[in-house]
Length: 209
Image (tube, rainbow, N blue to C red; front, side):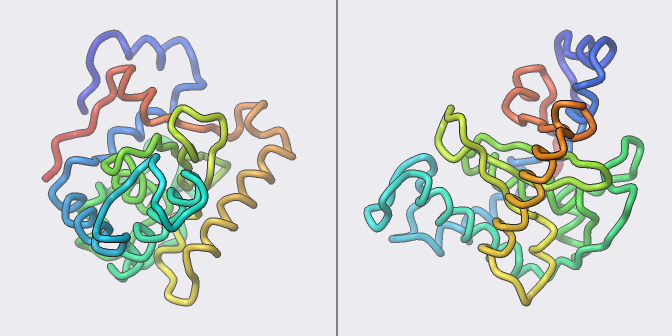
């Protein structure tokens, strides 16, 4: 692990930070993520990656963000990664593969598909989040840089050929809204891990090729 500074203090005194350790598995600079980013660019207008900027074809930055997310989803879906259900997948102590291992093995539990997706989003420059709910985890990002609106995607759905990015986004939104209605974030039973904040706390990616 690579944890620098005094960030250990957060985990010793405040249980609300316990899932921030998983930021170590979000590895945006890995070679495998670089290759995925190159493929994502090819799916975008003029091969141009715009993050928190607006494509001329779109009416808003949010719409352009969804355009990029769609490209990410389709590239990862093309990797034929099988989603493996695991009820302990979001529990501390669970053995978790790094994104490069998930890509190589072509299978992953929810935390592994989430950290893979999040690795790509962080590399692109999205303000990325991991959304932990009881027994499960998926991915979110801020719709606009430093904005107040978060959007979501069910990252396990890259493992299904019969769904598209819109299905995955709708599923993520539904799961998130259900947790809000149940008061799960307020109670601490569900948690939003801000990857950018984790980096500021000194939790940086492990050096994985």
